[in-house]
Length: 333
Image (tube, rainbow, N blue to C red; front, top):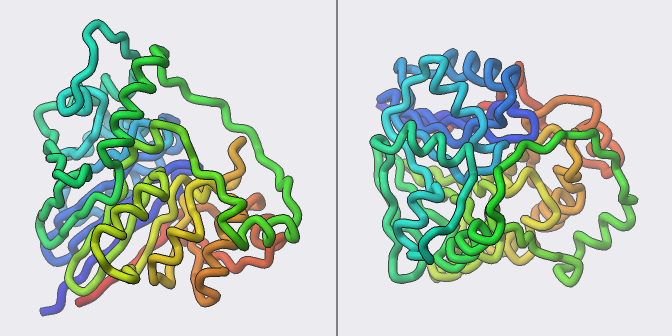
């Protein structure tokens, strides 16, 4: 009997919410939960329950503590979604593996509240000598962590100690296209125009290289590309082939470089965004970089709305949209 795995990518507005299921065993991995927004969480909960084979989720992976990745878990846990285990590089875990001065004040509320609720279900990750977390094997899935590394965790820890402020939800406003097609082509053409994301919470994001059977997917969370590049180079492979890549940070211009794309061979790219936000996500420059690297690339988006269609038409892209707010990627081996 052949094995069959499905990756579901849900419409979480400008957030991430993915579900990976082994259809033979029912084993499930949830990656992030979208924002702390009631109407979004209720829709996601319904979608998740409709596709689960078992009446529980085996493992939830929280890539980092930005609201659009962690926020929905509060509602998920209240709405009787049973989650057996978690992977979460929370602040409390990071401070265990990276010592810091005493008496630092931390007030990342969603991080700390969730950690208290799930502490006894967390699978602790181990740092290796090369500065990255050790691979784990669970069910048929091998998970390699391409981000963060020790340097990014240290920077994140220092950032928290300086901030001493609450994680707050920012109001989302509609973004408008403020770049011409000619300027987009120029900025996508060469990394001399590329400026990497420097935000420390994004640098702490888990990036998941998941292999199962003959398939392999790369789910980049909000990771910084330089950290992923360094991890790929350490593998001593000239080119790494993937069946699907979830692009980092909702398609931000600062999280997808030509240098990263040149190290991978992939035809399918996923953007988790609604194109209706104050950050300019997804950036047409990042999308153009993808197409420049592979003219046959397919770009899947989790939102079907007028803002996404405006980006598509203005910059001559061809997006693949979700059906009933869900994208399905099926793998047989």
